[in-house]
Amino acid sequence: MNVTGIDHVYLTVSDFARSEAFYDQMLEAFGFRKGDTAIGGEPHAHYVRPGIQISIRPAHTKAAHDPYAPGLHHLCLQVESPKDVDEAHALLTAMGIDATTPKRYPEYNPEYYATFFSDPDGIRLELVAQTGYRRTLIERWHDLKVFLNPIAELKRREQSDAG
Image (cartoon, rainbow, N blue to C red):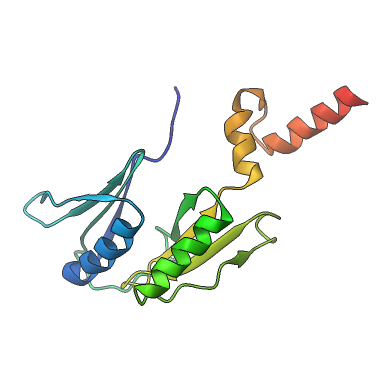
């Protein structure tokens, strides 16, 4: 079996109109297109790009989002470079969205460069630049042989072959 990516993510929102306005503005700026097909008699908004769909639908309860309860902690979208993160941050702030200043997060990865912000329900969103670690996973996937820490194991093998 070849799992090729995440096909879609559904987010439940407390105020559909408010969230739709937020996601319309943000995701159109990021090159998404929108469908508005209702499902089961309820409104839905489906935002698509090649390879990913983010949909919103009305929540059935009024409970506030808690990123530390079981369920979604945050949603991170990947862009190609730190420059793209900076551009996205400029777009977000121009829209009045309170996004953190882009910076490196070496506690995640030495190259990790991201900005964070939240939707109207407090769902944490993130934009991160692709890192060398991710590029290695993509480019060397078939060379990775172990389940746990495959890139570290690959580097050990390469050092062993070189030494």
